[in-house]
Structure formats: C-alpha cells, structure tokens
Image (cartoon, rainbow, N blue to C red):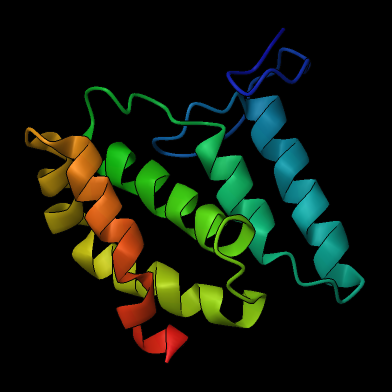
Length: 130
C-alpha cells in the first residue's frame, strides 16, 4: 500500500496524525526513526518539516492543514533557499505560526506572485536575520 508521500508501507491498523494524511504504518515508521535519532543524540529539526510537508492531508479544505503545510515549507525554504542556519529555524517557525493567518489570507488575494515576492524580500527584516 502506498502512503500519500509515496512510501510503500504495510496495511495496518493503528494511530496516525490527527490531520496529516499519513497511513498508520508511515506514521509509526516516522516515530520509530525520530526515536532512534533522539536515542543517539541526533537533532533532526528538518525531518519533521519534510515529513509534514509530504503529508498535506486535506489541505484544500482544511485551513489548519494549509497553515501547517505552509509553515513547514517556509522553514524548509528558509534553510535551503535562503541559507538560514538550523539554529534560527525555530524562531522562523514561531514567527510564521503567529502570522500564518495573515500570510495565507494575503496569498489568497489577487496578485499572489507579487505578494510572495514581497514576502521573500522581507526575510532581511526578520529578527533572526539581524
């Protein structure tokens, strides 16, 4: 059976995330991976963001899920596209979680490309970039 992320996983009953689209076996595997990394003292801040972005759930219908996917993608972009160090990502995530509703509302208006461009140009104004 294939999960929404494309992983081939066993069909099994079990818990899954409240609003991510992960199948129970995929959710269990992710939890096991995070537990193993943690047991070896490995911090994996981007793993959660990558996992969440690959399991968007019902993002077309659920505002909470759209906001979640947006924040996780922003964090990944901040690191990989803008070179923001891992030590600053929690601050970025916190700031965008607080502003997600305004940011998503702005993206929903006409002129999305301009709005996104304005958002991208505002990275230097973030407190973590000063």
